[in-house]
Image (cartoon, rainbow over all chains, first blue to last red; front, side, top):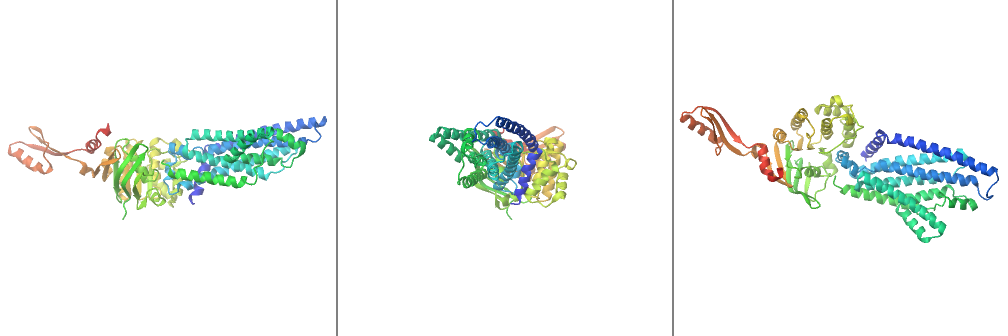
Length: 287
Length: 280
């Protein structure tokens, strides 16, 4: 266990010295700046509509606007978190072994499982802190722009962070088998597949199609980052009701399904299984 | 006392390819053993099994009495891979510090300074790896392998990127390691280098040991050459023991003798004869 902080530090230093963090910081600032501009404009526009007389008395325009904007921010945050998770982990095993970076480390009395676990810890810590920070900033911006705060804050923050951790774990597992480029492509395709299945579920809800809903549900269990994202998305407007809730359901970021009580234990089990598979495969791999 | 490295019936298959087909090899304490063989003979696979990077299909390998690949075995060895890279953003000193932490070495700055001095990189201790030449990186790789004073060193082509001066530095380093009783398995294509520094040579071909022994044992007699006033005379069937008699016969015949040479094959000739067509 003495080696864990050494490898974690090595992984973080790698990101720092390769200027990964600097680039992420700059792009995140750009994203949040654009989001602030868009949020301000959207709330002002809705306010102007309201001054001319409400379209529907029963719709809470501030909640509809705020939840939609923060839903959009959640999508953007998860995407940025996924990019960070993938780039921190895509080459950890096979990619680094092909470049000759891994062998000098593996022959040290560290243990392959410790090495893989430490790289996961480093990536998970960075991604979860990053995603939580960006989401908190987006929620703050939404409040600043229109005075709206999500119905639940801690739960979606934690779920979004956990979703990024699941992506990091999948990417780390993929790095045992695939070269860096192939792994990056595979994980982004899985990420895309998860999001598409979520949208299919929303369409299924709207059309009352049991088959589409079942497909979406199965995909969410297979790729729990999607279920976590959906659960977090539904939590930000969990207390809305009536026409406001109906209007939210019709939007691209409003028809999310709550994951239910099995989501957290399933995510933990999923992470444990992915970790176990990665450790087993890595310990048997010739380098 | 257990040998620094002991392999028994070591075999490795990569699918249909048989990289090692039952290799027995031993490196004793303080012994410097050279591993020779053509490309694809299984040299790197053997070294990788010894340091736990590759799992054998059958057979066993032990490092200082511990099964190869275990933490105990890895604690006892230093390894320089044939193809390796250190993070470009690290300085030479940082590379060694990282490996000290991973190896649990308590040597600190003094050990790092000594190792950099040993490989001639003291001036470059603050230089980043990506600003180093390939030869400097290779010398840094050797220093890295020596972190924690391991009793066994596995060097896979340690001089492939070095210029003649760099090779001389490494030869001096190997002599120093012999003085310190460090066991070394040196995998190299450079026969002259192996001949100059190694106590014993093992030649691999097609995954098997085809010749092994001290360099002088591997050399075969090739006759005696005697310089006389009539020119150089060669006696191809004669041995070292025949030389005094041959000289006496020539003098008795009234010839003047200026020099006598006992001929034997070089390591290169022994190697080419042992690996046969694989050397092409």
